[in-house]
Image (cartoon, rainbow, N blue to C red; front, side, top):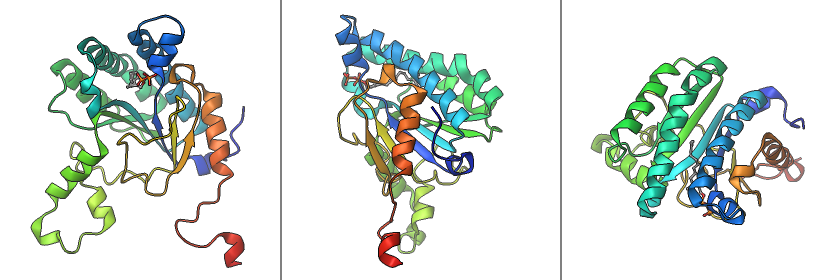
Length: 245
Ligand code: FPP
């Protein structure tokens, strides 16, 4: 299926995805939740390949929320292991495809092997310019905003603009500049909530909730979400084109 967006348009887009439904996908097949996460990791690989082929500018994937620490220990270690294995196994492929990998979220609670994989993938792909892939791990948007607020210098407190504040949201990459605002937020799995994901960056995001469980997500679903996005009129608080003509 072809996207209705032309590549130059897609190249400016930031698509963020809440990858939900792994557990239900597994339960429907009588398998453990961890099997759903393994299938979910395969869907991540497909989604990244699709994003490159479509020509997206930025894609942020919600891989592990700060609230996911509340899950059973074996599920947490499976998720973090899959994340580590993705970085180890796909970093070279990302380099080859021009995908710059950055991990956003807290790092101080990640196991050493995960941290090492994060560092290696970020260094290897630092020069890539085609797709900016952001993986949110131990991530909470409210904590990111609180952290940014705590990093505002007292002398800037009264005069900080939004762009300067946004640069403080990701302390792991202080020279990276602010991530672009999210244009399209996709959530799979049928639920309709934001779950503490990119609350600042999604101020004017178009929201797309899909019934498909994440392990079944394919390029066609991403194309369909982008087609839906392309049909919407974004007004950013201004009047519609028709009303202002
Ligand atoms: C939500 O499904 C999904 C997660 C909490 C984790 C997402 C992780 C992956 C897709 C795999 C690993 C990540 C990478 C980047 C390789 P859920 O378990 O809450 O599903 P449910 O709502 O059906 O229970």
